[in-house]
Length: 114
Image 1 (cartoon, helix red, strand yellow):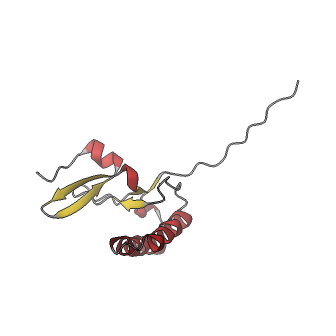
Image 2 (tube, rainbow, N blue to C red; image 1 turned 180 degrees about the vertical axis):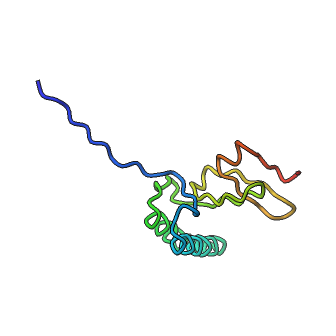
Image 3 (cartoon, rainbow, N blue to C red; image 1 turned 135 degrees about the vertical axis):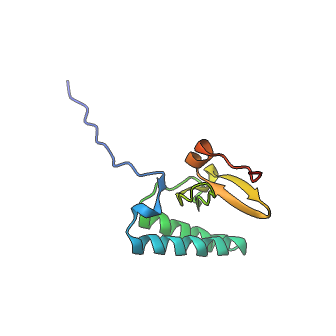
């Protein structure tokens, strides 16, 4: 009887913390995400998607099903985590919307009423 051979594919992270990246790459990723947000705000979704794909390629993050990434802008800790936008928790502080990653939303959930 033969033996089954299993190969273990390298796992891709589902999130990236910019401070774990080389400084020049972290700066580039930040700029690309800013540009992607500007395009999305102007309903230029194809351009936004291309920039998100570039960030995915540069960082090695697992591509989210939606193809869209976001940054944690939590005011409680400023972790800056880049992750799947579909998993984001958002809250308003006045008229400004902030995003929490899964970890921040679990560890110190914000509602904007703090």
